[in-house]
Image (cartoon, rainbow, N blue to C red; front, side):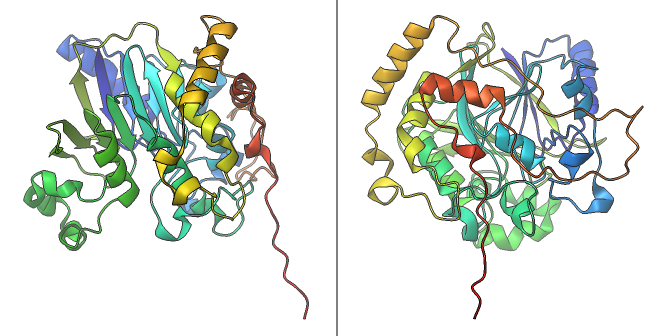
Length: 387
């Protein structure tokens, strides 16, 4: 299997696919999977643009809507995580992951998914201390700071990932794991990004939760983006396992935004598939998911070992067996909002949706696991007491 890793996408799908097509011709290779490390910008229309944290003067539709509408089809199976510039309303309706367009799959706010026999984990968003313990309270139309906090990593999503026991081949995060710069040529990094030096030397650059996941999961590969620079590192864990880290730039001419990784021992046969262990983790932790400002009430102060996964693994295994061989095939893509149509759109500016769409893919997953659809819970309005 050959996979192409891309840094920040910023809605430039046409350019990324063109770069891969050129590479395939020049290098005489076939890419089996494209992985994008955040800032994907799955913007379907002008309304989605109003749910993305970007100054108005920099807001652009990009080319994703063409793949969403069916005008174009992704030429390569594509997998991505969210970053800090996303259409948060669309990704929220696919909180657990799913197809944002045919052949383009979102890992989810956190998740594990299989592509062939390659096991991939991911954590969307970026870390901000003041929001880490909070619940997922943000809802469209994302008034005030909610358009920013919607993409901040939550402890609940990290807590679920910490329960993964089976080996992960590839892990994705948008911001870097804290401390990762110490495992590569940091002086070369200083030369490229001088402003990072103080943060690196004080060990404040990067995400502490991602650092915890790196030490706990010990994946073979870890890919990130966010800082718009190519950087490689090699982490040697105490048990002699190693993690090859690579960060890449954003999609622009003459920038290092694309890297091909050869995994000869892996096969792409079967495409995307739901991960059985991850389904058990979703089932086991659903009751702790807070969709208000209140922190998730995690058991044993957030100790992953407090969750006994075995009965949930048994339940999921029996459920999948009863559902048939196609049960681990992700639900098919379904459009939930109209795509931008340049021939008929007369507005210059969109309007953020006032509610959360129920995505049939998410509903199908919750039905499979016999869980309620928490993410459609209306947002809580705070009222000020009269004095």
